[in-house]
Length: 108
Image (cartoon, rainbow, N blue to C red; front, side):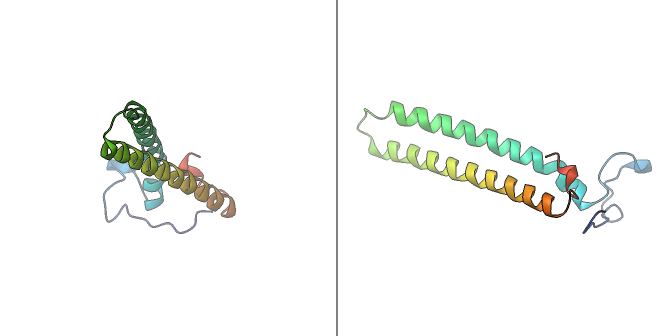
């Protein structure tokens, strides 16, 4: 059973010629993009955490407090973003459980 599907193939020609491949509904687009967006966000957060951590360590002995503060803010924002993405993932898992797997195309 698929709930709340919108057929967008007539408005936006996304299903390709002859109906092979492509996306036939909005849920197909979200199902395709969401895991990739979460993966990309996780990689970006990881890189920012590493760079900010190295910057904080290398600037610990220096007298430039402005640079140390900017690295601390970058680290804080990267961790907040990572926690937000982790929370979004678990919210999707809860929705998937409640809807009895109707979001199974998300690849989780």
